[in-house]
Image (tube, rainbow over all chains, first blue to last red; front, top):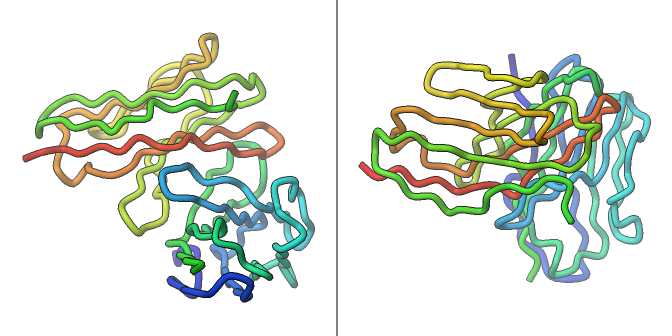
Amino acid sequence: EAGVAQSPRYKIIEKRQSVAFWCNPISGHATLYWYQQILGQGPKLLIQFQNNGVVDDSQLPKDRFSAERLKGVDSTLKIQPAKLEDSAVYLCASSLIQGSGNTIYFGEGSWLTVV
Amino acid sequence: QKEVEQDPGPLSVPEGAIVSLNCTYSNSAFQYFMWYRQYSRKGPELLMYTYSSGNKEDGRFTAQVDKSSKYISLFIRDSQPSDSATYLCAMITNAGKSTFGDGTTLTVKP
């Protein structure tokens, strides 16, 4: 079974530029998550989709971050304009369905450095 | 106060030692508990998953949950250098809300 795919793996941009990350979840997984992990911290949920609907985006900085999941499969996370404090790894994850203890599987992450 | 507090570490042990990693939580709505292992420059990898109080064993790993005390632990027996990584605890509510600890970095010295 193929895992969660993410690209690009690494990105360096200047502040105020924009960046986009792509994610393809495990086949058949209805729930997709984007997490931000700053060095030395645990993953923090940015947004959670159930199929193509948003379940939780309470911690997404909506003035600069946006995410979409068209057709309930792939997802894109965009940052515009980027700030220095956005330097982190952006982890995409998926689970079969939300709740009911379905385990969350992560991709390898997209590492962003803002200079 | 964070909903999930994890012993910060870092932790350094000799090969063969028993390792104990711990998290406490404050939200009674957490019903499902997971431990992830994260190697440097990699995504978190699921190690253990449990949903009831008690112990669950998988090889050298044992996950322990005490819902009455809001405390979970991961024990690693006969630790190996390959166990050197950051360990994350994670908790999920019935509604699917997930919260992670900040991780404990473990080094197992040969």
